[in-house]
Image (cartoon, rainbow, N blue to C red; front, side):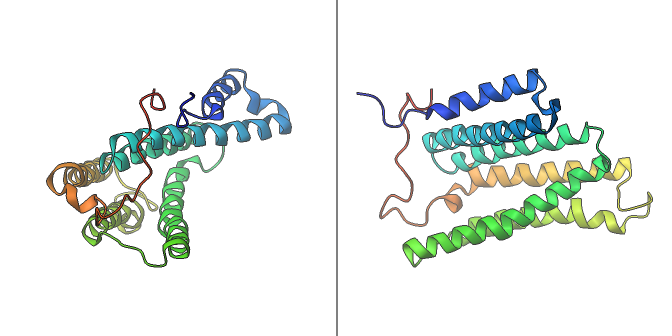
Length: 212
């Protein structure tokens, strides 16, 4: 009997099509090629996220959240770097604007959509305030360091960091995120688990076949 949790076919085909599109330079084949490249790119990203979600369900919380975060970060950084390496104008500001857009989308659209959908389905929802506060605290600190503080530096012209300042901010950001990961996975792991074990809050873990 086939395993119901086996990976969908499109999640296996999309990455292959993405690789072929990159090798043959489909995006450079006029407007039609650009449209095809965009569709294949979106499908490949969704396939990658689906694979990460399957693994996240397999390993459970809080490590599953970490797997998803790493997967999304790798995808976003890859897209940002590829755009920065292109010949498009204003590429130097692209990383900052993209990070700002990602923060706004996550904190407003995605969280808002989850709240609305959860309220419509469950009416009353439960939250783990300690874990949420820790995550928002780290996110706020890193957002201020990378997006707001450069506007008040005077070492360089414009809202940018000098090299030494950039190294300092990078080190501080790594320390902040590393500390958060330590808290999430070791020190206060229970802060990031479901608030109650009275019933199953997540889908059943996928089978070994589904996770390869």
